[in-house]
Structure formats: C-alpha cells, structure tokens
Length: 247
Image (cartoon, rainbow, N blue to C red; front, side):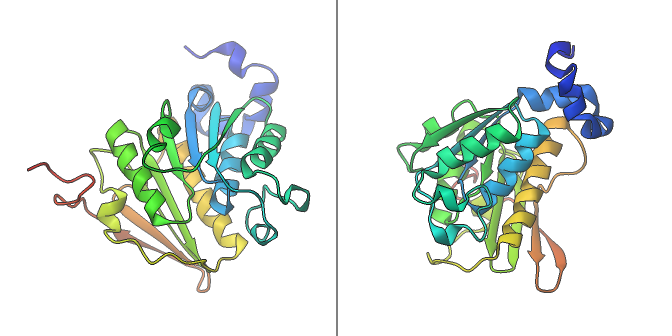
C-alpha cells in the first residue's frame, strides 16, 4: 500500500506533474530509494539536483575535495561563496534547500580499495559522477560484488557518454572500457555536464519507478558540437576481469 502520510498534502503538490506520469506508487518508490552519488562535481551537481527535486528519499554524496574557483564553470551547486569549502558541505546545503523532504547525507572520503565497500553500503543505486577511470573501476567492481546498479556518466569538452549497468545482466564498465585513458586535467564546458548528468538522473528515476527502456548494453554518446547523439551496442565480455565467467 502507498504510505498516504508520505505523499499527502504538500508532498502531492510538490510532485504533482511527475505523479501524472507514474502515479503515487511510483512517487512512493522514489521516496523509499537510497542512492549514493560518487563525486560532488559537474556531473554530481546535475544528477543530484534533479534526483533531489524528484523526491528520492535518501541521497548520499561522497567527495573529498574542496571547492576551487576553476570548478565554477560546471559544478553548478558550488558558488563563489563556497570557495575553500568542502564540496560535500556545499552540496548538503543546496540540496536540503531544494527539497527539505529529502534526507541528504555526506561523506568526506576518498574512494579507494579500503573505503569503497563502506561507501556504497546500504545503497540501492550508485551514480558514477567521477572524473577518473581508476575510481570508476573500483565502483564498478564493488557494484558488481554487491549487486547494485551503477549509472555511469563521463564528459570531455563538448562530448559525453552514459550507460546503465545492472550486475549479472549487462556489460559492466570494464567490458565497455577495458583500458583506462591516461590521467589528465580534461577540458569541459558546464553544459556538457548538465546534459549527461540529467540523462543519468533520468535513468535512475526510470529504474526506480519501472518506466521505459534503460540504457543497458548501450552506450549513449553526446556530441555537443554537432548537436548529435549516437548509440553503440555493447556486450558483456566473458573474459572480463571484473564480471567475466570464472575458470
């Protein structure tokens, strides 16, 4: 049954337009969801903002950095007044103001081999909003081990990519990207983060409420310069070191 108290009154009014799409029971599913967003940067800003206003019940944001001036062209939840402040604190403040019905939890933590299991513990879903593949591979492996869906997004300049990974059902991140690109301080415009982060948030909502067709075994690539989206089919690699068949 729907928890009437949870969606009554102002709650119904806040989510009225989306309840018309997937009903009160879909809204209740969002309210019950627990999501970890790995990264409080450009992708994290866009995905976290839209998941917050959608009414996801609990959002955990993980990051270890502080806000710098060079972040502000794309990390839209951080403002000039936040420079020098921990990114997680900046996110917590803004997201709580966007929707006080959502429980926002933050972790000031570097994601590494020792911490990743605790970071994703208790999560229903993981949003990959990172900026490097070494950390993404850690999230990918941990998500596979714990059977938690992973929503990947990446950006570079005017370009971006998105895919949805369901453990035991789809190609994993390492199947799609067997080798990490060389580390670099990559160029990016803020709007690219907005496009990709919004698609990630859409995929998360679709998964939770059971609507539409997910980006599973598909890599969606956005080319902002040509205003073009392309889709590439991807397959699980039986020899993948993260999700491959044993033996």
